[in-house]
Length: 117
Image (cartoon, rainbow, N blue to C red; front, side, top):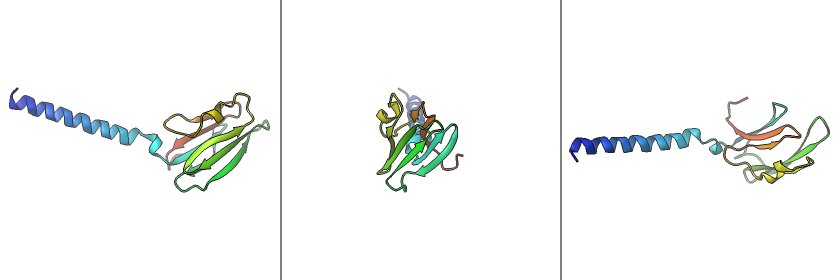
């Protein structure tokens, strides 16, 4: 290999490595500690999990159903609900890009950005 081919390969490897690091930092929503609780397309609570106290919040829907949202040690989950399938409860703590959703009660818990409405 000539010197110019080695330089081209090195430059491509460096650009590729920088692109991967940039993508991980910019696109990683789970690094955010801001969480929104949305019901019927309206943000009803917003927390910074890094400063939120451990607590349980009962959220009722218009039809009398409920979800119990638990904040514990900088994590959030639905600990109890009266919906028939309990998928939201079985989802566990919020992580990554997958929100916690309770379809019967139209409730979504997801990571958000600080300036997001």
